[in-house]
Length: 457
Image 1 (cartoon, rainbow, N blue to C red):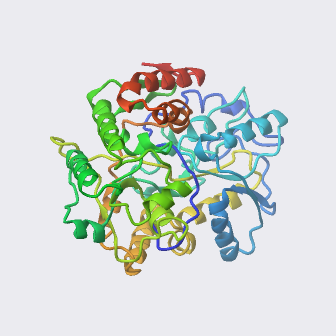
Image 2: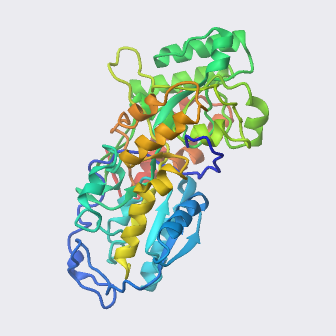
Image 3: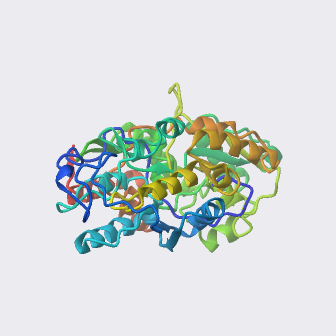
């Protein structure tokens, strides 16, 4: 997360833009459900439990979002909350969904608010599960004010939108940009690339002239979200409620795979995770560039436990286009989401909480390390970061990139990161090239999609 403060990174995962995700039946027949003494026809577009505004709400957060809960408690001492910490479904663990299914079977126990590090949870949380009421409350039928929803960065609520209705609020955005060490680039006489072809050419030059220095990494489960997504590789195109197009043999997929293979082979984009001691030991002071999400600045660069890049060195450049393309697109690596439970007996307090943690300056500007999804907060947050004088260049590219996330990579129930980590990472580590593994990746995505009930095109 971009920021001048140390960030203990929450391992959030999974993608952006979902225009037509979800279930066509998610809202049909909801009127027949109730949550024990509740109304079958709630005023907000879902069945409501009997409300009690004096009731303490239970809020589930990951470790990093404990600060959000504390900020809320400080600003709202009269609203009682119980905070429970869990893994936030990090790295596609699916713990959020699994735990809610247990509560569905028990018929009780649901938390009032849940933070998830994933962007694909609305795909299942908006749907009935085994005939049980959908977990997620509809937010855009009066529960959350329209003025609030309209102020989120355009496109940022797409992962939360299913069949035209909003089921969650984005915490922060994780658009990928090109980070670079301006001091090193100036020292070596290199120019920041403006296309992926120039990026590859510079990597080949660095390998010869400054071996040991790197221009990126490809050892994390979100590697395809940084490189494949930004190349318009149609590996994860959710085209309907239960339909996905998977096409990894395209030119767009092959060019990104070839780039990665070339730069992995010469050592400038090593297959090492940025969250390992090996990365810190081997590459502190040797990262020339790194394509990656907004939160890399605080989690990787301005972090004493990681690269610890001094103030005045870190620059940011716009996402790279491929030669011949008018505009660049970029991928998205995380950006958490907040859900209100449709089972909540204190919707007023639950809504108050999620609106505060996603829009209030007290958290999003003053405390949160990541780029806020709420546009007014994002503007103030950027101004605060630039005033810190940590960065060597203006942060304008990160603001521009927020609306450049390619919409051909969707938000199915399954985790692309989990598929990549299980299928691709071991094979790559074993010496195979990404390009030769594209058919294997295709099959693995298809298999997982079918398991989750998707028709694969």
